[in-house]
Image (cartoon, rainbow, N blue to C red; front, side):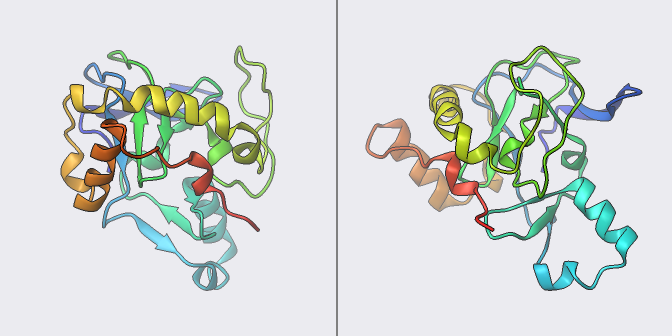
Length: 194
C-alpha cells in the first residue's frame, strides 16, 4: 500500500504518470508496504498468461527475491525510476523515504534493486549511472545499505501512517536495530539469483 499522502499525476510525455506527494513526507517514513491486496504471480502462473498480459505484468510488477512477480494493487505500480531516488526498498517488505519529500515532488525508486530481467536505459538525469542492469543490486548494495542505515535512524521520530501494515515480528526487529542490538539486514537480501 502506498503512503496515503500521495496521488497519481501526469509527469511529462517521456515519463508518463507517476506518484506525487500531496503533503510533506519526512525522511524515515514508510512510503510503501507490501500488503494482502498486492498480488504475487508465481512462475508457473506467468508461463500460462496471454503474451499481452505477461507484457503488462512485466511493465507494472517487480520481481521479488524468489523470482515471483508482485503486482501492486494501488498507485505503487506507477512509481518511476530515478538514479537519485527518494525512496528505497528494505529487506523488510516496505520502502522508506531516504530524504525529505516535498509537496508536489514525485516519489521514485531505483529500479536497480527490482530484479529486472534485462538492462534498460531510462530517461536521462544528472547521474553517473546511465543504465539500469539486472545485477545493480549486487554492485551497489553496500552504498544503498549506507543510505538505508542513515534513514532508518529517523524511523521512530516521524509519523508512520502505514506501520500497522508491518507485522509485529518485523516491528520488533526494527526496535532491535534502532536500539543497536541488531544490524539491519542488507538490501542485498532482495536479490533474485537466477
